[in-house]
Structures are given as C-alpha cells and as structure tokens.
Length: 154
Image (cartoon, rainbow, N blue to C red; front, side):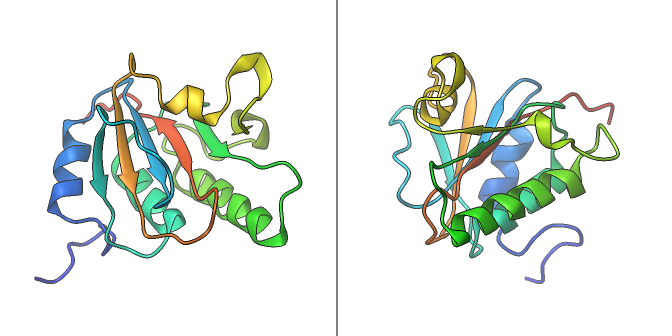
C-alpha cells in the first residue's frame, strides 16, 4: 500500500489508531529502543529509522499544548547529542500549531535530576498521567522527547 499523503512512512495503522485515541492532556513520548517503558504504559512501535522523524511525523498529526515540549538532555553532551537536540528543537518549531515559532525557553531539557526534582524519567513515567510511548529504532542514546496533546477544534 502506498503511503498516505501527509503521513510519514514510519507511521503505520497501529500508531495512527493510538494517536487517534489520545485526548487533550495526554502525553506522547517518543523514545529510543533502550528506554525502559513502564509495564503498564501504552506503547506502540514506529517503523521509521529515527526519533526525529517519528516526532516530526506525529507533530504534523496531533495538536500540541504550547510549552509542554520536553527533550531528554545529558550533562556534557557530545557533538552527536547536541545535533540530536537541535533536530528535536527544529521539529517542535516547524510543527507547532499554536504559535508561529517555539521559543527556546519553552522547550525543557530534562536530565535525571533536574529542576524542581523532576527529571525526564519522573515526568514521563508518571502512572497517574495518560501516556502513549512511541518506541523508535533510533540507535542514538537519549533520542527521547515528549509533549502534551493540545486541544483541537476539528
């Protein structure tokens, strides 16, 4: 079957169904294969090659809550990790439906023990929050990003 217009090749029917079932206030988390997804969490596989492509494709389809963007950060990032972060920021900027652009200060970069005691893991692994994990094939470490589903008038 040929790909559908406007839908990335890595987004299959299972992922489309899971995205359709998310609602306003739910969290979507794109993770690399090494991420330990909580057992009780809903998860689906992305068939494409990178977390950046998964994030960009999902952002085109799902409204985002402005300011809910989170990128997994590392202390003393390598050149590759810095490039990955820049790819995520560009995806958030390009696909933001709420604003013309995303200011760098509204994208949180969370490590394990970040501000207010919340790191990336504590934030996205919150069992009290409805969360969809999208596992990618990305081989790069820390290839994880998240956002909260916004309200849509459609």
